[in-house]
Image (tube, rainbow, N blue to C red; front, top):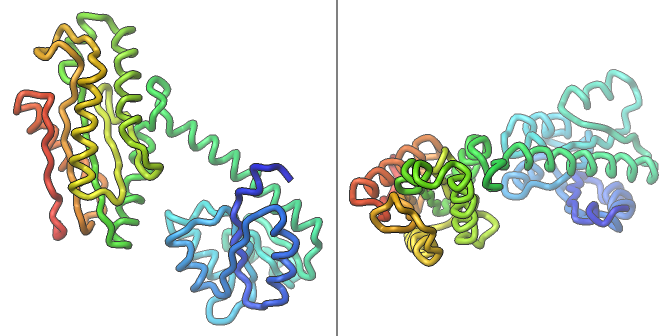
Length: 307
């Protein structure tokens, strides 16, 4: 088995101890194994952690595997997790129900170890390819940071997670000051080089894996910062401003003589507003204030809990 596959987490949803031990013994040498014993427990687990593959028993008390799968497929957070059914059903119409529920494959009990290994391996490889393609679709070709498509896809999810878990959230919107003048003076080739350099400076200001730096528009950037409160937001915004100052990227069209950013920040310690568009509009208002205050400024505001 490829080394990359050993990082994959397989969630086995199985209420019978003997059946679980059989599956665990087959897969545990190649994958990380987690267990849930019911459909409800599976739903709860997947709200906080998303396994790479789910191996789902069809017959379970209270909520069976088919109903659990349908619920998972209706959630934006879990709809892309491949689900392989483990079933004792042999009839075509019964197996068709597995496909209709949203399963990507199934294995029949008693489980053949070689068949199970090959089918799980195939789904892990497909998942890896899907993630690579998704990553390519979400990366801005010029700056090599996330693009607006990523922001549209992920911001609402991040906010929904913060709202469910009662965690803080912050967002920065930054704009290169007088960038049109920069292009007019230095030319568009140098302008592209400036965008790439600024993007990397912004990215290097964020060391946590949870943060995401996005090219929002031509010379506009957005930083998504889950679990960051006012103190963290202020520190990151000031650090970003200092990074540009230390880089001393010449800008003859700026009154400062070097490339600067106007920065607007928005935060909430108890997220109630999970609309990404509302957060972007609020951050844009703060960015506008920074520009009105002479540029190369930072404006920060709390998004109230009841908005």
